[in-house]
Image (cartoon, rainbow, N blue to C red):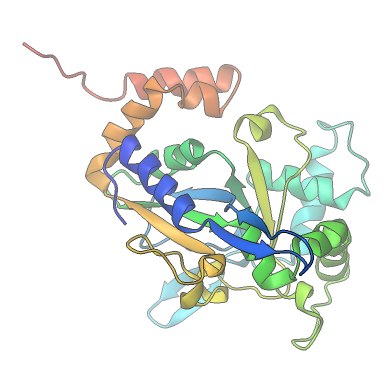
Length: 297
């Protein structure tokens, strides 16, 4: 599905929500039947270059050297990357204990170090901003994940996942990062699939951007390779089984990016919003004057 404006974008999201909302009946024979409505809860990630970029964390990305030859973009062990980040940054961050690895992992991701985390947002306009604010000559995309149905697909009942999510995150960090021991392929299911969770908002930007993280587990491959095609959401029809809809991309043509950024600016979604503080003000002023202003005669 392609969109050209912010209005079209929001309309497509609302249509998806309606299409993947479903109703079930429940009850016992001696009591009136009750109906329950299940509505999707979406999270979003924007990419400036739809064709090139993959949904995979920085620590697991590959770099092409020549035709047929690729290497891991970051050759160091994941533990060494995080350890070096903590060593270099702990003098600036005083309120996080050295042994709180989950917190340091989030901070490292937030400040650009390659980790096994991938950033998402609960705010669709924030994702659209990031999609349009880079690679101006490339088609962009916003990937949408139906969070509740994703958790249901890979982790069973939502209640079970909620009760054990913190433990699952701790197991992944301890096993794969600290001890560098990847679970075997036949290990219990939760160790294989990425986990969606909301971090503690230790930085103002994380709160402003409505940050959500996806933590990769044993499967070190793009999310689009993990989720089968039958679980992609459809834009053009009401699905027979809406609870199976997990993921979908919205495409933004390159020639629509500038117009969409202008529309987002009118809605208050700009550098000042995305990057609170003087840094964001500077970015905003730079972007405001980086294009030749059009004059209507």
